[in-house]
Length: 386
Image 1 (cartoon, rainbow, N blue to C red):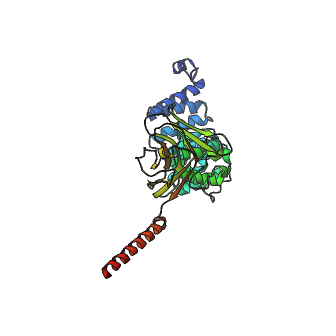
Image 2 (image 1 turned 90 degrees about the vertical axis):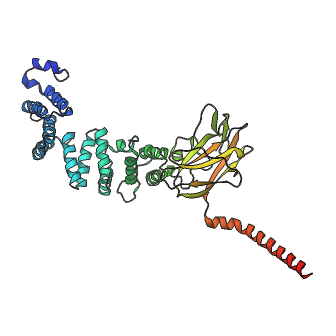
Image 3 (image 1 turned 45 degrees about the vertical axis):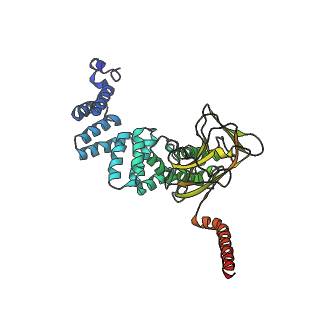
């Protein structure tokens, strides 16, 4: 009772006030009152010297008072009593990370995570270790043992983007020493990377651990065979955008197709998917079954799809030329102008437009132009000789 209600502590003998003393020490430490916290922690240690938590509060109080060597000594005793007491491991984690002992820091992190602690502190420790190549290598060696905390590490999809990409780099390396984890373990991270349009990072993990999710092409699911699926093959594929006045459905039948309908008065985003391409000019084509193809527009952006400008080029015929900026979170989007009727798309294609390709396409036209000019000169010469 004295541990949960501090006001009851005065009715309890000193020898039974260990819990209340620890709770008070924790509260005083959170307030930055290191002196008072040390007195409370000493009381807890006096009546229960083998409890690692009372010692750890004493060590934190010493740290806050700038007494590093004394804190090291206290935490050393704490660690000998229990290697899974988190505060002692965090203390030595910081020491070893600052001293460049990445293997030792990874061992400390491993001890904290094995104790079942998965919170903001452990995620911060992971982030600190992931900042350097040496730290990532040390973490990879720990992951290669398939620890119990691997699942929490892989499914922490709410991590900041730099941290998530650092984890993708660890998992995607073939020489990292991590055994193939399979789709069940890695799909949450693959899907989260794809959701943030980090296609290259998602592909690296898929190629190493989940081949079913690897699109193996510039465009994933170009023929909509996995459209709307929740399996591995759709992890890096199309995302559909549906509202009350916009319908996007996959048609049943032998051939996979999607049917879209825009009943609003503005151009609407229909489908999109992340790309891993270089900056430059690209030609986007769509095979449309039936009318309405002239209402389709394509756009390539970074981070978030944006509404395309009107274009005379038709996606459903020769293709629409679009410009892609160089970025890591490229996304291709298809838009539909308002109009009556539904549009059925069979396939989408994208190809780079290089100067060489432009020259090859223009050669026949240049030949015709040259022949016409030559014929005109010959006729002019004939008139002069008359």
